[in-house]
Structures are given as structure tokens and as C-alpha cells.
Length: 310
Image 1 (cartoon, rainbow, N blue to C red):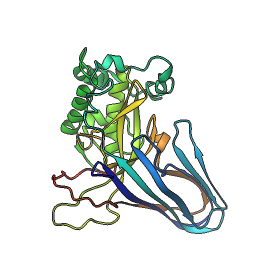
Image 2: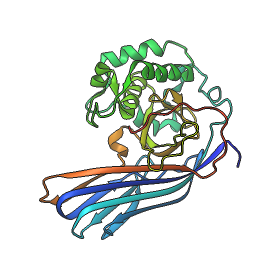
Image 3: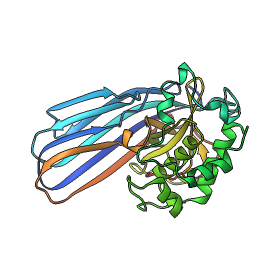
Image 4: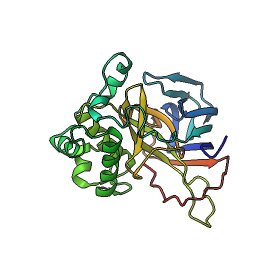
């Protein structure tokens, strides 16, 4: 295992605190890293405290693993801890020139039998996100015959350059049109703008949730628990390949990214959501994510700090 493969221990802890007792808590979450050609899940567990009456894992329509749990012990705090050990390979040399990544983007629209699943990722959201503004933005980038990887790089770079990362400026229900108007948001907003642009051109695009390993600044210690859940986007290539890119950080996805789930939109892959039975008037949630490299290979190049917490 050389420099091109990284191994991470990921710890993702979500704590819900309630102002009064909760008698029943039912939850679903996507916190299990995917098995992919470039990613292997070596170990994985999800523990819930208080101990659930019922807990199970299920694979959804898109191939993501969801955890379900039901806690019936009365509680004022619920803690969900997901632990994973994952191996991630670096993209192969020249992957942006291989397959159809270098072909005219028009050739990457899903057609034929191998594209049956990709068609789901071509369809606009409901309510619709592809507005005339989205279409016009995409038209400037996806000019006739332009190589797909080249156009996707331009899209990534433009969103990164023209939009401001602003924590707390949006919510999960913020529409793409609003993000484009404000020119600010977080990783999930930038990913959704990119996805709407790709779909406006008939391309299949997915919303990806996962984790990003951050490199501490030179001379600083790695801060435990300072990582975050992250979101990026991917475009489908014939041969059932996905080319993943991160407009929040102006780059194609590499071995620093741990992929958890891929869906049509945020709502398909949200890390945790649930229903509680309580009289409590208020609640709060805190999340701690730690992506610890286990191979600690010395890296020579300086990596710019990456934005997370999408």
C-alpha cells in the first residue's frame, strides 16, 4: 500500500439533547461509508445510547446503507456514534483523460442499458430547480463539443470563484435559485447549483455526502473532532463511472474524501433524521467528526485548507 492509498479511522458522533424526557425516538441515518471500486470499508459500527429496542441496517434503492433504530427507554440525551475504518485509493494517473471524461460532454448523456440507473440522476428535482438562470449559466460552460472533464472543471472553478462560503447563510430547504441570487452558501448549496447545471444539459448528476480529511497547517497539531460532514457532486460517465468534484474547494475529488452515500439530492442521504415523542419545548444537536489518517505518510506538498461543514 503506497502513498496512493490512504487509510482513515472515522468517528462521527451526533448528540441530541432535550429540555424534557423523550419516551420514544425513531431514527434513520446514512453514516456507513460506501463500498466502491476506489474505496473499501474495513470496519464499521453504529452504536446508539440509550440502547435501542430495535436497530437494523438496510440498503436503499441507490445502494447506500441506512441504519434504522428505535429507542423506547426514556431519555433526555440521545447519542449516535458511527465508527469506520476505510481505505481510499487516489484517482489513477490520467483519469481525466480516460474513458469518456475527455470526450465531448454530449456523449456522456445516459443512453442504453448500462445507463438504466443513471437516468434517475438526470431528472430535475420536485419542485424544479432548473430555472432559466441555471440553464444560462450552464450554457456558458457546456459549449458544443467541449470535453466533459474540461467543462466540469470550469463549472467547479466558477462556483468556487463567484460564490462566497458563508456558514449559516442557508438551510436544507434553500432553493438553488436563491443560492444563485445570493451568491453565498455552504457545501451542499454549491453542490446543488452544480447538479442543477449538469441536469439542465441532460447529464446525470448525483449529490454525494461524506467526510473530508483535513491537513493541519504546518507546525500545528491535528485537531481531534474538528473535521465535518461534507458534500460534493459527481457527474455520470458511460461505463457507470462517476467523476466526483468539489466546488466548495475548487478540485476534483481525491483520496482525501471518504464517500458515505450518493443520492439525487440532500434529502436522499441526510446523515440523521428522525421522529421523537416528547413534551419537551426545545432540543439541540451537536456533531463531532474526526477523520484520522492511520497511514500517516509524510506529504511533501502544501495542501490549501479545505472548507467543510456543509
